[in-house]
Image 1 (tube, rainbow over the protein chains, first blue to last red):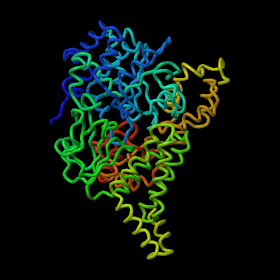
Image 2: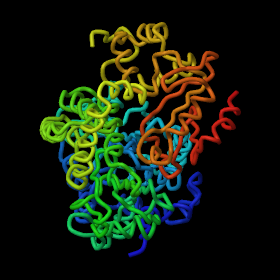
Image 3: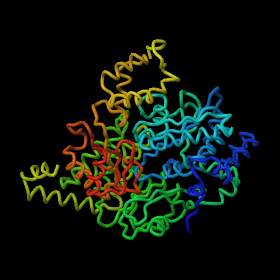
Image 4: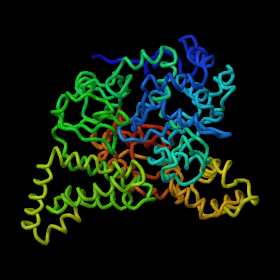
Length: 417
Length: 148
């Protein structure tokens, strides 16, 4: 199976700053078609296509839209989540840089379908360089008369990973601290300023014009199980050709990482960012789908020189820094995990550390408010599952270091810090 | 919110302008000092603690005095694998500051940050809004020189 460039289809083929170039390439054809459809029919088409969210959670897109459509309200909002903060993910940046009109067309159609009058593109602060170009893209679309039913505002974030979580993102747009909200109510019922709100990832929305144009049947013929269509991946780490690739859902990991990105020596991979699964290198035949591993499509490759404890420590350092601090299991759990992993990393581990990590992981998964805390321990548990010996070796080494160095150990540790 | 009617931002609707306002003030003043936040509180009718709470939540709204140029080096996995620590070491040597500090002449602040979405160009950093990728410790002096 080779690359299947559908969402990436326009990237490189059009001038991202010129709407005429997009129009010449069949741009806004799907929008014109959607305008002649009943909103309900658009939602039905998306439901039939089996399109799922591409930001990480994989919720069925059509179902989400239907929920918002069926909620009665004066005002409805549509938010494009372009807060791509997941570690190892840069596909949305690529899409926004190379095919911004594809996104705007997707937003226009989604607006028709759910009956939204106001849309936001929530752009992460790190992508500030895209702010002005995106505003110009929106202005061009408006000038061409595609935005009569919908106003699109580019909203810039201010540097917070958690704002990629939908309820935190809405708080951020409202001018609040970007902390997660309790759910329910879910955004399609009560979201931004308590109004029905749809939040879709950049890639999800860019699939919309293609589905409307070519039909749900065409789309759902690609993929496997409940994972339909294609997925855009960001590959980085120990590979020869890091970059953005698009494959049909269900393609084997090997195709992406070895054939396309050119990895040779694979000890392990992490799929889906800092809260993603860690997979050992011998599982390269695993298909990439919602049923197995996918997340945001971030794939980081580690070669045999990499230390698995270093890897999960780095993940946890990021997550403990980015926890919004609202709920205790996440705020405290990530810190305690970081402390334990840090000791293991420095050769000061104990047997008890392993069971403490496992117990903490259970509590955090069960009791955290949002995805960050719920999934924070996923890489730790996977590392323990597949690389248990490395943890036990480190505990043994720790015993040795303590008995050998005795009192000097703490001093040498200080020196390391 | 008890401030309804007093200022220009209410608890709904246009409070959405708060982040943009904070960024404006940041652009004018370089950091969001107590004086800046207090005058913003007066202007908007929002309590000072609300505004302080919002700005301290976000990494790009610094309340402490920062350097004219903010260097943000990505320390997440893809960059870490490609020797982000070597890059940070080189910057430390060049400027004589640790992450979290600002040079005495207030030209540079250094921070180690989470993923900046440039993993295909790892190791990467941002200076202000510009991304520098495929770094090596040896490239640092040259890049910093252009800001001096």
